[in-house]
Image (cartoon, rainbow, N blue to C red; front, top):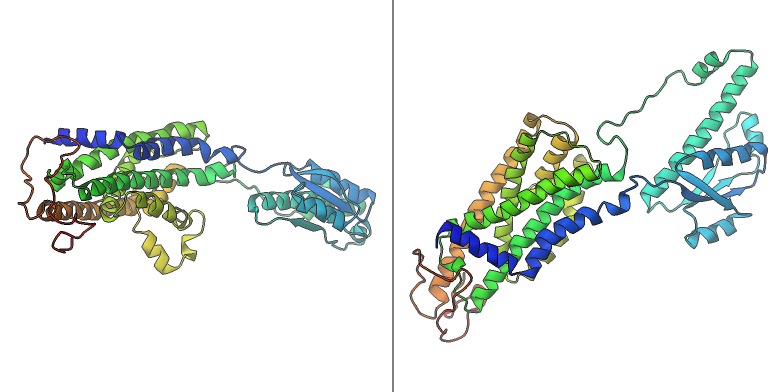
Length: 426
């Protein structure tokens, strides 16, 4: 078979498997809409809060209005007691409870610091953090008004009173995540992981399915063509698939969701190339190691959460255990996510990610060599053991069906995974 005939055979093998098509194409497109959907509003706003006001003063009601005016909080009503408020909170009707203690106005006028009580579900850390931010903004503003009013009462002008209260001005400007939104924070990294995981599953399903067919006595083209030719053909086919899908993610999807992309096209292409090659070679390795194709999905999916939480953008890399950090460096997703975020979201120069780029190339070479060895080893094993006591299958270029050939009947028990008729091990 020529190289192009092998590519055609691989193409037919991919599109004859509903599982591979659904994973590679359906999964990537489906997740491009599904994952960012809950976070289209970027940050949780107008969270429902119930107020228990034990003070009942004009100043406490002013605080309520200021809290309600913040974009993070919306006061939906009042409760007469903490027990009533807690009951409504446990039923899921409100996101939190604000308790204004008795003597709130008196303590402020005496220069004391009254303690406001907020109760919420901290397991929803985004919602909890937003409500706390809104309450802190409102109470800080009210406190500033009272302090400035005291200074004005001494006869000083407004400008001097403001400077005495806040001698230092703070001008906060987010640099990389300008909206402080969840989409801009997590989606760019997760999109890289989605490409990584779906490519591994697709190649694992293809390799696992061919191993199952070989054990059933199918003399397929993957046993007859040279291992290097098969490796390059399979790698080129999936590289073409995922190059288009990567452009869809980093081009159309980023523009659609308003995610910044600062990388030059040439730099992005230079980074995508070793990333896809490294992932592709690792996927072929997985396909040759698993005994059943369905294991590819289970193994890769189980690794998703550990990979995303140890990639350095959710949890600081410096806070990870050293052993765990070294293990996750074996996955192309780890240097890939770091490099893409620095190059495309943080505006780094290509020279600043050169180490990660070289790491991806090293992974591509190592996993590529391992993939070739496993393919060749599998071929040699089945050449000697697939046909019971027969001569090895020829690796010379011959005309074969691009999908499969049925081997002669096997004498004796059919060899299992890695064990031949005489008990030889792969």
